[in-house]
Length: 357
Image (cartoon, rainbow, N blue to C red; front, side, top):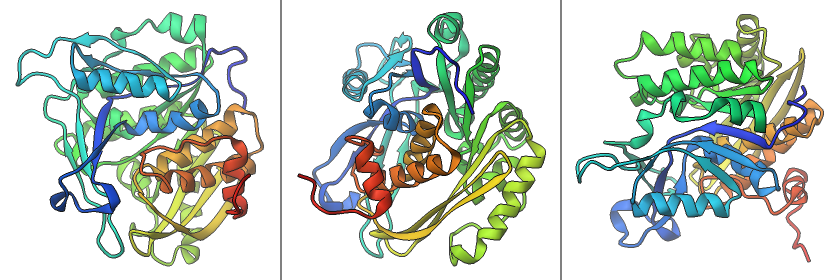
């Protein structure tokens, strides 16, 4: 699978940027009076693998004008080698626009992580394609892969239409399209008729389709294994059956990927992945991994997989790098994988945790 021959941006994505606040030392939210803060979004998390490894990436978003939170987000994106474009919108008073707050702890042992999304007045819900110079971004400058996520695609009617229009524009300019279905029940409430049609149309334009068993079933209506991830190895054929259904329905896609996760405790997971690429199956059997913070593991997988596509790697190598990038994200308190170099990711894949000097 080849990306556009010339492109300034390896990856670009529409997104609604916000912040996550997290207690230190894996404390529960209600028990802590100290918190760290990071800029985050599911889509920008995916870009972070490529940006950390020196590839220029771009987020298409909106900001609240003169907001210190917006300034914090911009500074963090710059530090992560991610460029950004987007309008600065007037707040409109204290009850106007703002950036989302994601309040989440990491969990510990048998105490599961808890996430509370505080998104009232979220400025990113107003994102639309008219905010951006599409001809310059996709035509003059060029984009290797446009990455879309089911979060931004389901956030509002405006963002749904924005994602669909961006996917169509990307295809027009020879840009590959990646779509991570990323189902969120709260985003779909009240839009159960509109969103399946929109998601199906975006999926029909995608070159890479990513999702877990729940995503493919609830977003696109396919039958598959029970969600929850128990006895993963015994369900691999069932996962393959589900993905085969998806391939039949969306034959334009070249890659179909899913992650396999079984939660043993907040600190220990079984982590695997399956890829169908150009008619061939590739499987990373679930392995036990240690987890510092699970949020962003799937985004790390997607980012690693797409980094391999950008480099023109064989499908199996893309899957391996994606699997290990997901492990890297889970070993960090950040929501994203931030590899020092490719070797760090490959050492994770090989199980080489020896000190590096």
